Amino acid sequence: MISEERIEALERAQIQHSEALGSIQQALDGLMRKLNTFDTDQVRATNAENVRLPPSPPPHVSTVKEHASKLKPSVPIDFDGDRTKGRAFINSCSLYFSIATDRFDTDQSKIHWALSYMKLDRAATFADRVLRHEAREGSPKFATWAEFHSTFIETFCPENASTEAIMKLESVKYFQGKRTVDAYIDEFVDLVDVAGYTDKVGIVVKFRRGLDGGIQDKIAESRNDRPADNDVAGWIKAARCLDANRVANEAFHASAQGPRRAPLPAGGILPRTFFTRPTTQPPPPPPHSKPAPRPLPPGIPMDVDSNKSRALPVTCFRCGKTGHVSRECPKRFDIRLMTTEEREDWIAGLLASADAVAPHITTDSANANTDTDDDCATETTVAQDFPSHNE
Image 1 (cartoon, rainbow, N blue to C red):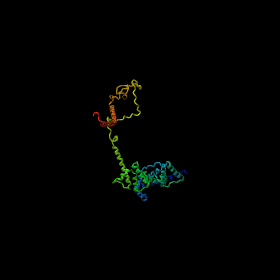
Image 2 (image 1 turned 180 degrees about the vertical axis):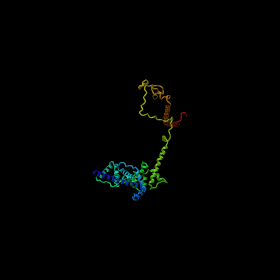
Image 3 (image 1 turned 120 degrees about the vertical axis):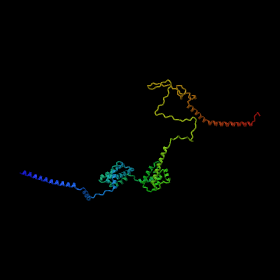
Image 4 (image 1 turned 45 degrees about the vertical axis):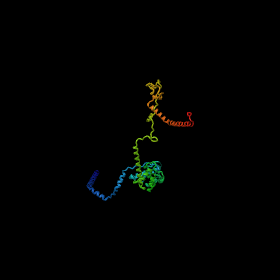
């Protein structure tokens, strides 16, 4: 009996639980139908009235941020602590921060990012000292980027840059000299900026003093387009324009020049000689060339390779005999056996010798004539002083 009552109680509880679940399911179905049929425009209007959205940024601000996010700035090179490169490094860091503004939310992130590129020599020692201080104290060494920037300038930039620039501008070290106009202008503008000069007339005067004399004179003597004495940009532009014109003119003349002729001798008149022929230099021998073998006497075999060839008897082209060559021929001074070129050279040598001896012969003849005239005069005088026996 007890088990049957328990079973009936469980059945009644199950039925009640099922009825409750059914009613819950019906309520959920009704809610879903209401949500599906609810007007979405009404919901948006209600939310717009109840919720206040933040104002949208101006259009130019959003455009600048979008443009900055698309740029890919270049990271600075590793810094070693050289004072001549310190200002360039810190300027690279500041430029990177201005472009990638969304990547650095705090000044500490900027400082640590700059320290990550200080890896060599004095810069590495400075970065290590800063990080050890932060690890020991538990707080940053520099509170702001401005504080880090000023400390970096004091540590890694020239101490007296403005003084050195002023001293250089007051001397002749900045003069153009053999440099190009562009190189001179770049250094001059940088020196003026570092020195802090603001007097435009004084700047123009110093620019003219250091500029090439020819270019300075042409600018100063020009009529209509001469820049004013306080127009620094005008003088720089005029100097660059004149230098560009000079370079173009030199290139034109260099391309228009023809082949150069040999210079004439003193007096500009070529000497007149008999049997003048152009003298040509023999071509230089090839490198590592072996000298020609000397001819062997007739009847002596030539020691060669496996061909076993014999040396032919040497024949003179002048007299036709064997045993010697033409330059060693005993009859090479015989005019009948000379070649045409040798005859011309021999005649030219004779004429040159005659020209060299002629002045001396003329002088001797004149002296002889003078002596003869004197003897004749003496004899005449003697003849006049002493009458002839024929009389």
